[in-house]
Image 1 (cartoon, rainbow over the protein chains, first blue to last red):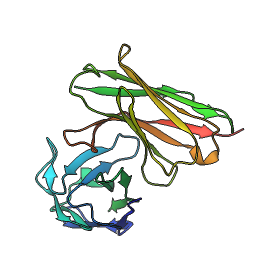
Image 2 (cartoon, chains in turn yellow, green):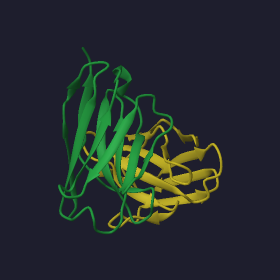
Image 3 (cartoon, each protein chain N blue to C red):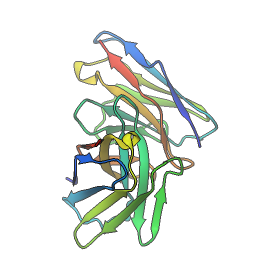
Image 4 (cartoon, rainbow over the protein chains, first blue to last red):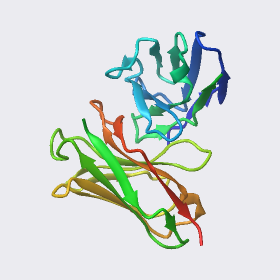
Length: 105
Length: 120
């Protein structure tokens, strides 16, 4: 099983600031990583796939990078609607999610 | 716009069977060749995929799951289902149904989720 580890567990930032979220895979997943945004009471939303490709309709302030075992989701200038929990997911071998990073004010 | 909606029992007794259905609207499940999935989130924890299926016998289950699960697709009703047998408190979670995105293994469309509590 490929284990995805996200850090930090909680990230405290202010609106307008840059947020950098990390995700590490227990073995190489090449670029087979997606990122999701999850707000309470809502369905998760696909942000990024293939490590760095934004899904349709996702604002340009969201960007993904990395390959192999180290991945990063960057939100360049946080908006109020961006405060949520973010999950990374690998889909190279079976499927597995990270534990999530909560982005809070 | 594709929409998914989960339904089923919100309270299940230990050792019994949890049964959920996902109704798909806005498009036929037969178009596009996408996979359909179940994912859950236990209280205070992260997301865990349960199963995904393309239909026609191509169904895959998370090998890490402790409770036996079965997923099925009924394209005539445009819905798919999940059964988890012999449930325990560890199966308490919000259960989501989802459809694959353009890239196999990603989840583009999700239902709103349904909370299922396992308790006597």
